[in-house]
Image 1: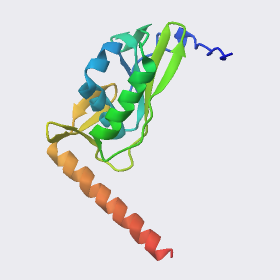
Image 2 (image 1 turned 45 degrees about the horizontal axis):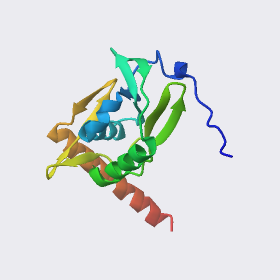
Image 3 (image 1 turned 30 degrees about the horizontal axis):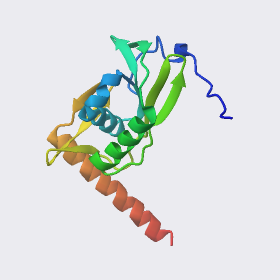
Image 4 (image 1 turned 120 degrees about the horizontal axis):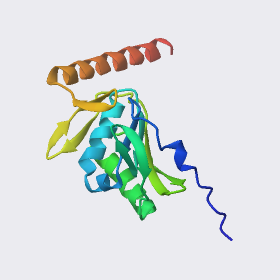
Length: 165
């Protein structure tokens, strides 16, 4: 006999406020994968964070949870989308979190270690960064700077590894 899944209380989410590391999305966002990718890339290029899908909010405060139907298929499709669309690749596995009001999808985004991250769209790359509780596109000079910083950091790490041998 299958063990019953313990449901988390809705109050763990309801009343919480979005911030630099927390984003709430209604389940309808699943029809707009680009919006999800923007959020993930923005968090990768900042401090990381959590994206909760299936949460209604008003002025940045969670007000209601929405059950994400067919959550297992949604989770799998999201994982494929994240792997196929973000560059450089970063392994992330969305999870299904069960609450009293239903199932939510949680994407835990780590802080990126190979910045800048972008998502591919129409043959181009789109770069974003999360600032407080919003996203902003990165300017060309910020992308250049992040690339150069990354090369310097990788080179100095490689140099340290070589000298320690």
